[in-house]
Length: 91
Image (tube, rainbow, N blue to C red):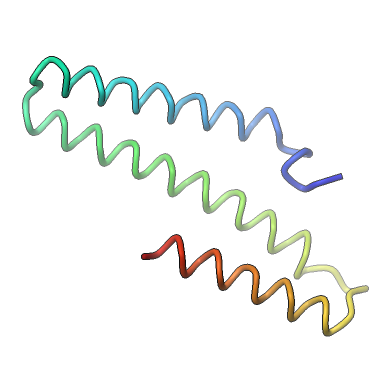
């Protein structure tokens, strides 16, 4: 079972909140909302996405890199995968 499957409901709830925040941002922009409110909403969306990323990443690291019965080759492959994801996320 995937580590994300174990937390499926919690992660889906986060995604739904992000969706609601993005819809709120869209509404603000469509209604020519106040710039400070638009910026605040963008920051909220960004924070929510960052929180989701951190939660999934932490779970991935714990499930794949924190185990003791893994070959060095498999661990190295997982490390490279995490590094690749982080590099693309931090661009």
